[in-house]
Image 1 (cartoon, rainbow over the protein chains, first blue to last red):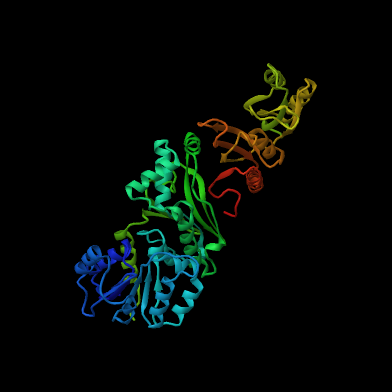
Image 2: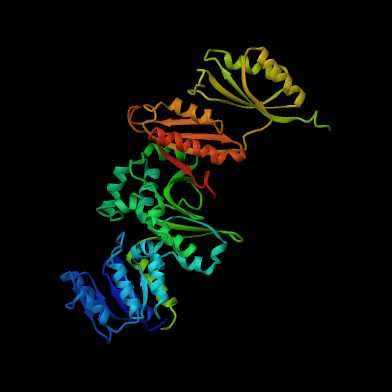
Length: 318
Length: 176
């Protein structure tokens, strides 16, 4: 879809980048909301002014957040923070937009991982549809690639799906440093958040694997179905022993058959999956074509926004 | 060339008393009976339940000479645990992390061996902060093609029992 009127819900790194880049893709921004306010202009918002106001006042506009749904828009971009369990308020935003027969592009992993079946049902009953490329692997077109393949011919999907964990493991291996040291460094660099729990305990990678499994098997998976192990407190000595043997350790997410698991795994040091730093990689094993691998930036505002805007382009006309 | 004359590869598993000169004494009957020694896994630091040191020897010989080798070994008083033409065709490397020494590393290895599904070919231990702190070990396990799943199950069970963290290779012992 081109010349789309976008409503962006959520004004974190991804939401802000979508606001900033929408014009470059030929789209018009008619509404932006964060948790406390909204800016609405059916003739098209001045995106620079909206972002400036967010920066200086901490709020995007004077309207109530709910007013966003009354605005004239074609596609809702759901980019509020990921929440687990009932996945609210993200899930409610998607439901509202679909009820109004609008398309929704979702960047929030919560609803797609935790309530996939309900989302699919809502989308079936709506003229609108949902897309969620940005939820897996940031800029990497993982879901679009799976969609292009015959899903039944995909035998496994494996990948490095969390840049923070990968940064920590690859720095530990390269510098011979211990976990706590490297994690503190990652926080100083802004690679890890102040509370990096979901990144290092495997939850974030697990949500992405659940989404992949839901796409491959038409739903049925949630976080509760994943066996998850994180990288916390892996000692530097483990990485040294791995390196002596030409191997290294990566936090790998796997979807094989109906089994979804995330955990640190030994991989060949120069193998496909041993990407370094904050890079992500998705490897899709296919029955007839062998493995396909796509690596790229798995996080970041503009990177993830590019996946959101590519999804907008893939939507059918309303 | 008939099968009886063909040189084949064999794996012999021996148990040695922990005394100087034992390894040499065990290997002598192999050479004197026409066996060609390929490799020796001397599992140092690992004891069998009987308190002996397991040694795995790969050799080449004709079937007839192989029988003579095994006989000579037994005559020399060497414990031959297992002798067969089947060589381990698979190997897996895993990492174990935790209180490896306190949880008795040699018992951990013995339990893996005792399961019969895999043999511990090589062990490297790294305990940079002392043996009373968390340490890491790299284990190279060898096994038959159809023993991979069972071997990984064994390692998982032993690791869980001893509260050790296991870092598996990709796609080991699963459906993949």
